[in-house]
Amino acid sequence: MIIALVTPYFPDKHTIDSGIANHCLLLAQNLAAKGNKVIVLHIRPRYNDEQDTFSKHTFAESITILTYKVNAPAIINKLFKSKWAIIDFALKITSMRITSRVLNTIIQQYGVEVIETTSYFSLCYFSLYKKIKAPIAVRVSTTFSQIMNEHYPFKSRVMDLIAKMEIAFIKRSKYVITHAHSHAQELERLYDIDSERFQIIPHGIELPVITEDAHTTDDIKILYTGRLEYRKGTDVLLAAIPLVLQQKPEVLFELIGSDTGNDYQTRFRADNPEAVLEKVIFSGKVDNDKLSQAYRACDIFVAPSRYESFGLIFIEAMSYAKPVIGCSVGGVPEIIADNYNGFFAEAGNAQSLADKIIQLVNDDELRKQMGRNARKTVEDKFTGARLASNSLAYYNKIIKDFN
Image (cartoon, helix red, strand yellow):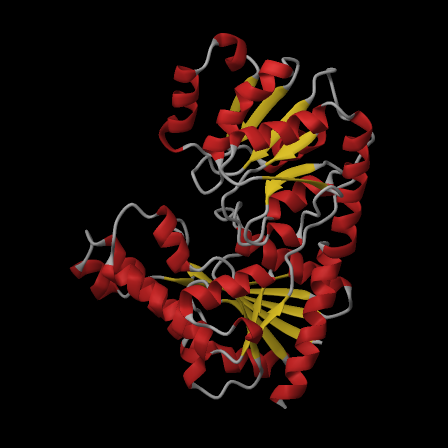
């Protein structure tokens, strides 16, 4: 099969830590490993050090990357040079127009049979109004509207328009994918999109090679990764830490992730004695090698999120054969099986979280058994190979329907 992936993000020197980019790379590599050819149509802003507007790169023989490097129209840059939101809006509209202009040409040139794209930034939006010669499957993750509501400290009418265009794009698309049944139901609740329309294809990861023990000390290490924020339950974890240390002073905690303004770390240091502080490491954002080392070295992974549309962080930890503790929210129950590969704590309840941590700290054999179960869960459901197999099955289905 010949598949095109249309994306605003793909790993390069400026795009290192993007969920969409990593998904596209993983999917492309595993589709190619199964004997398919993949064309990646990467449409993104032009970087300041670039002079060209297009490049072509082929690797692994079966993957071709076509990169279109986009600038907002010169007149927009001139008239609105101090209005970054308007320039960004013009950049996104230009990217949509280029996608619409080149898509059929690429389909014909490479013999593309099916297309997968992300709803994020709606690159294929204008293609809805043209006769495209291959079916387009739209993967919907956290929408731009959801991100704006959670993370943007300001309101912008043009950014709101981009968000509305994404929802219209999803509603008008015939073939839609998302990663969890709960997220499909959330999209129905928020935007009145029938959840039954979505094909559920979970995200995947590459399985790491694991060793029996990566410890350098006898202490029990507990790891958290992710942004330090309310939605991730960071406040709940920080409230639970002293409760755990009262009973288990030998436990060590490490928190990896960005903390805007060091707000959480500052409050935690102000509220707790030195005996607690010396058991907690705030590592900030780290590179992939250090993150991998942290997963290997921990005994328990904890992320008491109040909401996760999927919960990729749990899969990453479980791939290293670590038991996990989360909350039964969003897509997390589709990953964690309570009392099998981890525990559920009550969302927002620090004492409940502390109790689950202590239970695992006290039982070495339970930790190991849950860790083995966690690894098996990932091997069975959440690998890149499984992602590619599930995607291919859906592609075949929609190609038959399209033709």
